[in-house]
Length: 383
Image (cartoon, rainbow, N blue to C red; front, top):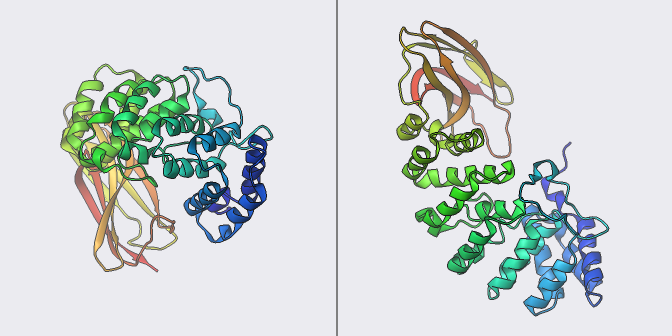
C-alpha cells in the first residue's frame, strides 16, 4: 500500500528541523519546538501539518522577524551556484534535508511562517523566499505578499525573471498564477491578469522546461476567466514559434481545446468541422464501478483536402443527486488524407480515485472532433 501523502511531513522531519535550527542558532529551544510541533501532528493532513509546524516556529524563533529570517536561512542546506542555462528537471525531489542543512518538505513550514509573520517586512521576507524556493518552493508563501504589496512584489518579480536560478524564475510564474491549486486565489489577477503578462512573455522561451511548464499552467489559469486573452496570445506568439514554445502553448490551450473554444481551435488550425463518417462503438452497454469501459472509434475521411483533427471524448457522469456532469478527456491529434480510414480503441477507467467519485446510473459517452460532437453512445454504470 502506498504511503499517505501527509507522511512527507512526519516526526523525523520535525526532529531534523529542530536540529538544524539549533545548529544555526545555539539558543534555539529545540526541545520545546519539537514537543510543540509533534503534539497533534499525526492527526493532521499534509497542509495542516505544515501550518502546525509553522505555529511552533512562531513560538520558538526570535520575535524579531529579521532575526528569525537569519536563523532560518542559516539552517538551509547549500545549493550549487545557479547557472541560467541549467534545467533542474532531473533533480526535482532530490533537494531534501541532509547533514549540511534543511531542504525539501521541511521548508513548507518555513514558507508558512514567512507568509504570516513577514507581511510587515516584505523586502526581508522576499529575500527569504528567494532562498527557500531554491530548495523547495515558495509558490504558496509569496501569494499573501502579492495581495498585500502588489507593486513591490511585481517590481521584485521583474528582477527575478532574469535570475540565474530556474527555481526562482519558475516562482515568478507559479507564485503569481491566479488559480494555483492549494494556493490562495489571487482574485485581483483573476479579474485582470495584465500584471503577469509581461513576465510570461519573457519566460515562455526560458531554457528550462521546468519554468516553461509553469508558464503553460499560468496561461491555462488565465484561459478559465479570459479565453480571448489566450487566443490573442496564440495569434501573436504561435506563428513561427520554436518547438519548445509550440509545446508550451499547446499545453496552455488544453482546457480551451477540450471545451471546443472556436477561437482557440482556429488558432491551432482545428476550426473546421470533420468531413466524413464517424462511428463510436461500445462492445458492451454496461460497466461496473472499478472496471473500465471499452470503446472503439472509426473515422472515414471524405474526399477533399487533408484534415487536421483534435479527437476528444466526453463522459456525462451521473452525480449523487441524479443529475449529470460532463467531463472531457484528451484523445488524439491526427491528420487524415482524403478517403483515409482510421481506427482507435480505448479503455476508460471507472476506478474511484481521490478526486472523483462515481455513482451508478445511465451515462452518455460523446465523441468530439475539433470540439464538435460527431457521435454518441449510452451505457449504464453499475455498482
